[in-house]
Image 1 (cartoon, one colour):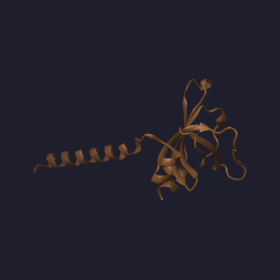
Image 2 (tube, one colour):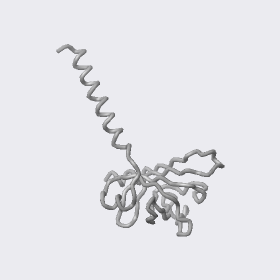
Image 3 (spheres, helix red, strand yellow):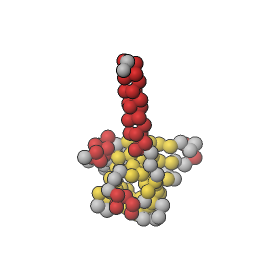
Image 4 (cartoon, helix red, strand yellow):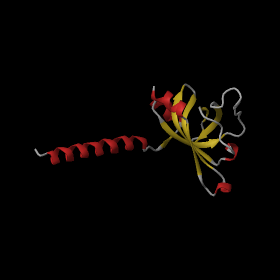
Length: 137
């Protein structure tokens, strides 16, 4: 075999590997019930439960924020986001969380908020490095 052929095979194998790793991140939205049974990192879309308590004390821990979210089946769960509370969080129209269940609590590593028209339908993406590291364990 020529060097060119070997290099071509290696490049094709690398491209296949990259595509496989990217495809693992492409997922559909699930519910809290499915997240509980799967035990894997999932994406959940829902709405903020505005009548429930939100906890954020930046003086104690600026990277700890808890709130309650209702999923598409109106199941409500406590969410822990190991990141700062986003500005205008209470005004969000919908929230997409990436993370996994830890008992009855959802540990979120990423959060994507759909904000009201004030932001002209922009989406705000929040990534928590600490939660990502905990989910990888």
